[in-house]
Amino acid sequence: MNKSDSYILALDQGTTSSRAILFNDKAQVIGQAQHEFEQIFPKSGWVEHDPMEIWSSQRSALTDVLERNSVSPEKVHAIGITNQRETTIIWDKKTGQPVYNAIVWQCRRTMSLCQKLVDEGKRQLIQDKTGLVLDPYFSASKIKWILDHVDGARKKAEAGELLFGTVDSWITWKLTRGNIHITDPTNASRTMLYNIHTKMWDDELLDLFNVPRSMLPEVRPSSSYIGLAQVGGKEIPICGIAGDQQASLFGQQCFKPGSAKNTYGTGCFLLMNTGTTPVQSSHGLLTTLALGSQCELNYALEGSVFMGGATIQWLRDELGFVRDEHDSAYFAQKVDSNEGVYLVPAFTGLGAPYWDPQAKGALSGLTRGTNRNHIIRAALEAIAYQSLDVLKAMQKDAQLNLQQLHVDGGAIKNNFLMQFQADMIDVDVILSHQAESSAFGAACLAGLASDFWHTMEEIHNKIGAKKTFKPQIDQGLKQQYYQGWQKAVQATLTSVTHHQPYPIL
Ligand code: ADP
Image 1 (cartoon, protein in one colour):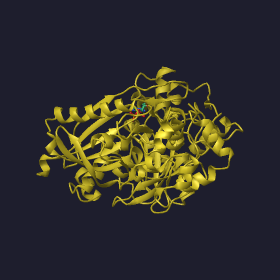
Image 2 (cartoon, rainbow, N blue to C red; image 1 turned 30 degrees about the vertical axis):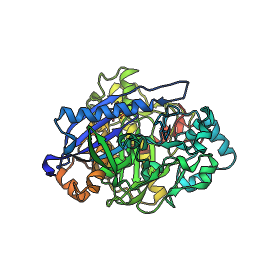
Image 3 (cartoon, helix red, strand yellow; image 1 turned 135 degrees about the vertical axis):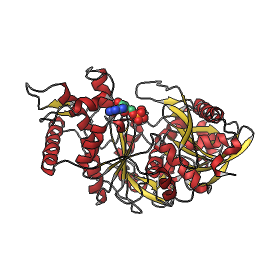
Image 4 (cartoon, helix red, strand yellow; image 1 turned 180 degrees about the vertical axis):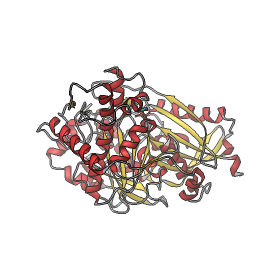
């Protein structure tokens, strides 16, 4: 196959839409297609997707991107898959029919089940083996719920007639017409059934959640030949799989211990590579499997900020301070300093490292001279301070210095925010060359396993230099700003602290 006339196809199965993106040999995006699908909320706090719609939207995105760009399936060298993590699907091995809707990562229906395990003293065992905090977020309690609540499901599962998979497994199984039931270590590490030290499914955890081993997918390396997808009567090798956050960490080349990425979307998602050492957090962060430069398994610490870009949406929708999020940078730059004004957007409580689900938001430091621009500035600063708080916790846990921060997501277009972030963390902030960093990571995994590309260095040389924000602020001023933030946060804290990694919906 002539490389300049062939492509890597990344499938990005996200929480609200399925996307397909074509990359050429220069690692450039040549086309993409996207299909949204229904979010199902059967009860308060419950979130589901229809697995058949996940599949049909993904298949439509795939066929659309090929058709619109006049690329025939023969010209696709390999497929890479990245996906919303933890979301749980169980289906019948023979008929291919799901026995229940997909239970989405956001779904809180298994709170009481998780609380029961906490009460039985299982929290530490689970953290030791999986790196995760005992919470409904992860797959294990969702599998148990389906087996316990769907008529006949447990009996069928015990007879070996049902299969479990996260969305990567489901998509691969559908693409290969039911031939291949696999996942990769990054996705497996989010199920709460996979031991991140032995890198195997763990019998003690399977017993704890009462999950039959026969349901589980085989775990294959993230960058390897996995099987043949049937597309338009042709066969395309699937050669890459990783969960969305780990795919982004990989695509952004965070390979050195201490290198981290932050995705500035609705919330912020931070991951720091800690190399071959699994670091257990004492700040409620997660330990998870990630990928090194040779696609070997590394470990990462993971944390999130609940109110990221959503803080700016709040300024727009609830306060009417900006018409468009983009304008926030312009208004923030109109004031030379924050003048002691802080916004703590604890609208859904505070996460790492504070873990106070009862905390409420606050605006402080107001004077007669405070105007709208100060508040807009405070909102943008808050995104950076919260990210800094998580990064500080990661550095403390891992005893590593932050090397660089690689960034992606919708809000990286905001120059004020990016410069302020660099100032606060005191290392370079490096912008992703394109918005789709998870899809890019999946494309890299597939391209490397299929000899389309040879090293990550080669791929990054093709991309060239990236936009970088360097720290510029005076150190004294930086300290003053951050101390002000810490005081403002302290004032919002209640005495109730939990160790819940995610807010209760
Ligand atoms: P998600 O994938 O979570 O939907 P995106 O990566 O699409 O998020 O980013 C959207 C978020 O980024 C929104 O919360 C929006 O308010 C924020 N955002 C987008 N552009 C800007 C900007 N120029 N400045 C600040 N925030 C922005």
